[in-house]
Length: 141
Image 1 (cartoon, rainbow, N blue to C red):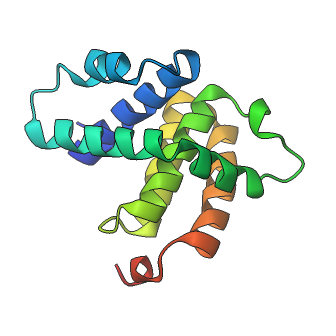
Image 2 (image 1 turned 60 degrees about the vertical axis):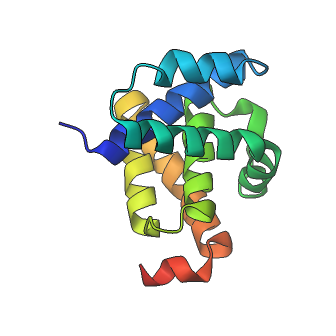
């Protein structure tokens, strides 16, 4: 059975994925995908993550774009884009999650929903973001 954090992350990826198709429907998407969550802690965390990413999406996308080599942001698959957004957010703003945990989790989600190559791609980008942009406090977790 998946951990509560994994459940949280997978729901957030699904919300972000839907947002690429329905960018003006955050509230609807959130309630469709998170409304049925029984565990109040997971639901609260999903909302914090999803809103945090939604409110910073331009900043997060720009940061991801800075670390793409010979690749354009618009060419990234919707799935990989969603995972990169989640991973970048978690690296920068979730101070209680160790960097290694974020990287491992994003790779696993990429492998589960994408391909083996997705995991490598996600790792390469998020590793650069972690090394250059993660708050120093996260290195001691």
